[in-house]
Length: 557
Image (cartoon, rainbow, N blue to C red):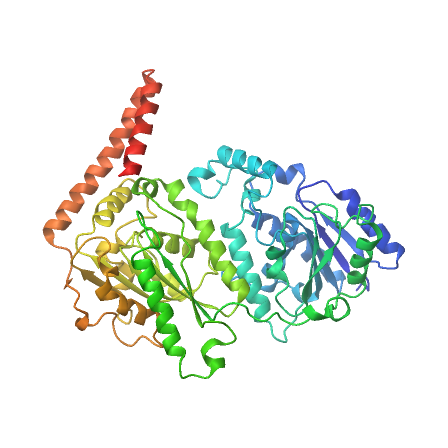
């Protein structure tokens, strides 16, 4: 077995081969040797083929699998997007993903992971005009505006998976933070993030994922930008190279950044409650009422307890996240590429809280489109975990796989509350479901099929009223108690609340809902037929004008 380490380099999208070679040569001149293996992900073969980031990570793993038996030590280097591939491959080898728990043979040989301007939080499309324009063109070509994630046939699809808040980026960030937080005395490599102080792509706040844990820290190189921080011939020159050489000689933070040697203290609360509104709504009204009630109840519960137990070093033991995606009309919800557009925002908010406190416990209170954001995020990102989930007027399909969510420990309990005359769910969502949009449905009117088989779940109650009836003030104390209670022993909502309940929606209302849903489906079909007829009979202008008029009218009402 070789004494020298295997050094695996995964570059970014730019052509920096010369810079890596210069770095290798300079390190050899200083007596720092190893077997360098350059893994190219930006070549023609990868840029112009249908692939995912995970495909590139598995390719890298296969190469390391073949090389690793000859070495006792492995050093992983990644630059920019290459840093994400390196991290993903390491997590796969370490069995850190919930859906891929098997470990590789070489993961414990990794002594250090050196990240150069790694885009840990994902590309920010607005970072530069060039990147924003490039992303816009790729999304247009790939129909990502319609499908959310690029289709399997799109050659550059893996690049768009690295956008901030994407499913891949979120899953990687959460798995990375939880893996290193839970390692204790198990093998833990040194993780060093090199960051230029004039980097226009990666911000200082983006690297917390990789510096929050023991043996993990950040080295700032003055005068370096996103592309040249590892090039000995670049403006940072000798000073920048000396910082890199010191880490190669000994990556122990006690020598370079002793203040970062241990795990960073948590700066976030122990519990976070997402309160998320639905369509035609905002953070006023019930969101404010419930958020303030949760905060007040949490403070009351903390009184009389020891300070450490009540706050655990934080200003409040419970944080209510009232972030909003803004006003959202019914027509926007009906368009799948629009209603999916808020998922990245939600996933980035979730990751932000985990980065501040890896032990944070999440709860969720959501209405209408807010429940869609939660449910779709749970399906796409297996690393998301919520303890208490409260749903009102849910627009998720009644077939939603809640039991799978519970078996994977993504969700502990679900309280689903419905209204007896919920037209948006019973009419619009049923109609969208009928025409093939399976990501929405009538769980907020009919109840969820899989929750009926779970008698321990405080799941479904029906209120006499419209779409937002469960969120009105008579029921708000019960929602707060459900979220904050130490344990759930009885079904949600006692009879003493004064709320007007019923068994299920009446037969006549259900009949009218089915009729409305059918009319919705027929209306959509007629609109598509009219558009097809107009384009085939050279009436394109009238068709476009009609579509725009219809959209603005529906968006307004």
